[in-house]
Image 1 (cartoon, rainbow, N blue to C red):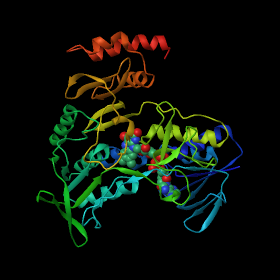
Image 2 (spheres, rainbow, N blue to C red):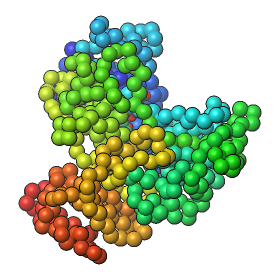
Image 3 (cartoon, rainbow, N blue to C red):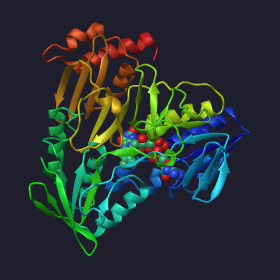
Image 4 (cartoon, protein in one colour):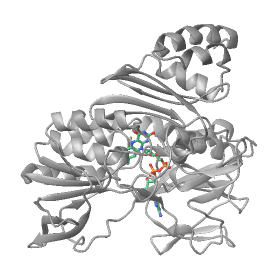
Length: 436
Ligand SMILES: Cc1cc2nc3c(=O)[nH]c(=O)nc-3n(C[C@H](O)[C@H](O)[C@H](O)COP(=O)(O)OP(=O)(O)OC[C@H]3O[C@@H](n4cnc5c(N)ncnc54)[C@H](O)[C@@H]3O)c2cc1C
């Protein structure tokens, strides 16, 4: 049996581990075109600010990989020949497979603005991008950032930390309006301003100007011009579907897979940012761009490839991240609608975050310690915690398990309710009952 895995991200690595956990003899071949192999993509933000060295981005060493006993090929898969059960690598060499995993991730949507084909326009997808930004920031003085969600903020803060003057352009009247509420956006924006970031609301790029092939200035729709040595963009990501275009595999926004992470071809599986996974509980197929779901999908895909029928059970999507230096956990469903700054889903984001049903909001705390709960009929549907993270794990568990919060529901909704205390007390008793 030969298992072939395209992509050395967390989904691909997890699949290798899962296959090896049940099949000691099958041959595993992994192919990736990233010269840096497997590393922490969320960690790129901390590398950009200079908080960590690039060596800290690699969670595994050579010995870990040797234990897994697989062959690694550096190259780009250019075709999948389904009828022949084979791949073409770099347009020339051929490799046969019995079971195939497509875990090729997603990539940044391009910036489609006149003049954008010049040097100095950057995105943050890979370690090579981050290194390129760090290099450019050494001599650059002023940067413009456009986009929304977590990555745009990571770019803003990274460039600021590298000493650049940063202009952050927002199309709407506030940051990440379909996930954060007005107050939370204000907290983030205030902190950015304190860090020295110059915010421009209701601002949209019109044209990019260059000197000697390098970005030098941008013009906004209202005619305002900003001089800059760098333009960083994060307007959304798109699953990498080019590889499967001629294969006849079913796609929607990503590669459609069933709850076993199997595509419409029983010998081809898909996992991670490129996969649009079916959720049997809601009957919907969802895109996530989150590390944990990618890891879990890779694990489940690997088990199924090795013949262990296992279902992928989607948990409430969560992310622990940092927004303007403030640790923030986002769990379950917290927002609604569209963010003007994004064309598609962002990095570190889930489509499920914005499908808010009728829910009542309870919130407490000010400025750096803030909590917002979305309360459904009998359970919590979502939560945002900024600052103090004591209740992050309890809330993740209770939201994922749909804990029945009826005993405290009315009290949570009372004006000036001490919601953190109520949740903490409820967690203690719920935890005992569920033996967590
Ligand atoms: C800057 C940044 C910040 C993020 N922040 C967060 C966060 O705060 N929280 C969170 O949960 N998630 C975050 N994410 C998202 C998270 O990192 C991804 O969800 C996760 O890495 C997806 O893993 P994957 O294995 O599906 O894909 P990837 O990690 O994208 O790996 C795909 C692999 O496929 C390879 N590949 C692609 N096409 C081919 C081809 N044709 N042939 C060969 N190889 C190919 C690529 O080189 C790569 O090795 C962030 C990501 C980035 C980039």
